[in-house]
Image (tube, rainbow, N blue to C red; front, side, top):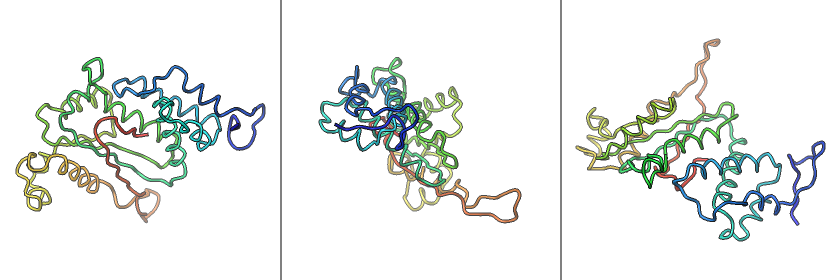
Length: 250
């Protein structure tokens, strides 16, 4: 029988041994086996359970051993929550850095909406922000942003994204249009890659434009107002994901 403490490796005052299988059973209770990416409540539930996992003090490996023994019989929400808890623990061991999440938007006019607005709506932008905010919460010196690039979507994916950004007041969501690189005659895209319209590249060009923008706008040095000297900026990492919610940001 796998046991763990209620908090941390050391036994805190009043703590008792708990059965990991009982905890997994508790977290699984009432959850469907299959996760519905159009339900915001399930995405939020993943993070709620992940928080409980971290607060339980149980080693994630012990929880994984039980939950993944028969993964087809374990709710997908719980499996996602375990992954999020594991990510949070790994992030805590990282030094200061900035992470940029990049993705392309083409034909996302449905998934960017909520389920109430469209049957296939995933509310993808709000959910990605929610997951990254949870992941980085309390992590001093570790920051993040999102760069989403419209690669010529005829259904105004970027316009919908801009409305959401304005409604929510997001400060670290950057929305670009690949056409901007073409219109500004940016050599890498116009001369080197020969782009005349977004149709000449689409997704590949969108991701490259996000990388180009991130590299151009990230400071190489940090300046201290109390010193004449500067130091190298914190490492800047970039991750690529799809625009849908098939992969959690947490």
